[in-house]
Length: 227
Ligand SMILES: C[S@@+](CC[C@H](N)C(=O)[O-])C[C@H]1O[C@@H](n2cnc3c(N)ncnc32)[C@H](O)[C@@H]1O
Image (cartoon, rainbow, N blue to C red):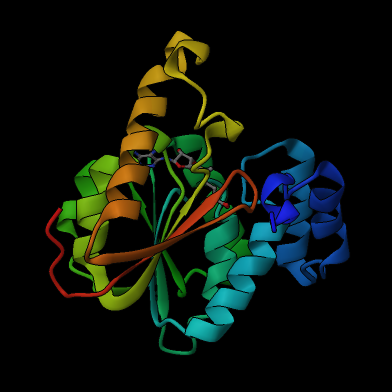
């Protein structure tokens, strides 16, 4: 018998709205920050990903977290609530406008000791880090994911989790390249190559989750990964 669920799109607009409105809002100053970011159209993780991250980090109880792509410091502030007393979040951003706002937000939330913002290009900063990290959240330029993967895997603890956001390229990831506007073709090609490498790698375990514009969770099964 055919499984008809296989042929129905899972995430209808109504369900996305439901996930965003039904699930508990964030309270306090971080809730204000989320609402402000959404009103202003600042690209922060959508609420369904917020709730997923809260659940996941609540279970994993990481100590050391690395983020690539801080923007205004929303997701790093959220993640800092889950690292325990001794834990820390390190995040990276290259854009001065975002960096300024992120710093103001860390001060406003009293997180200056809990979050370190490294300023500059991730491709230059990542090789200088030693980690290791229990959890890495990659949420930066999509075309660079494939380039950052070896560094993320080097910095990730065995059994740690690398979470990657926005991997479906606005839902167009499976479209033929001719249907993609020329300016987005390099991203399309590199994002597809990244997904192929990760999902097919014998030393990595991964899962695709249709939250927001797609989330990929990766864990490494061995200390050294040969890409
Ligand atoms: C989608 S936003 C991050 C949102 C944030 N994680 C949140 O949910 O609150 C992406 C950010 O990554 C930064 N970024 C993109 N590519 C980068 C790179 N190669 N190095 C450093 N920062 C980068 C951008 O400046 C931007 O602020």
